[in-house]
Image (cartoon, rainbow, N blue to C red; front, side):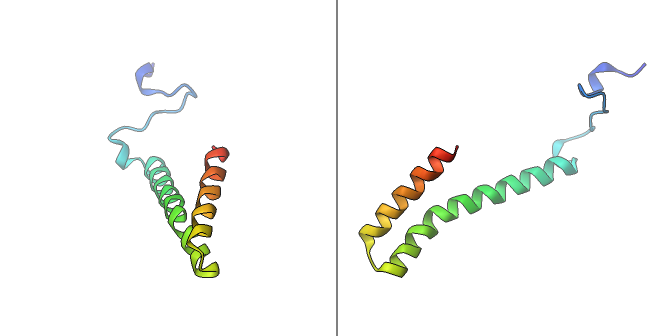
Length: 75
């Protein structure tokens, strides 16, 4: 009989060793990290784009505020 502590609830065998050696975990971790980096970068890029297009710093502030509110509501 297989040790119950080494099986997942789905009945599959749990991977052994540290998580950084588990390919599924590292793929998920890198994907999530790059997604968070892209989201943070867009908080800077969108207001700068508004300044470049319109030349208005106030418009960049309003655009950044609206973009931040939209991201906050999307959670």
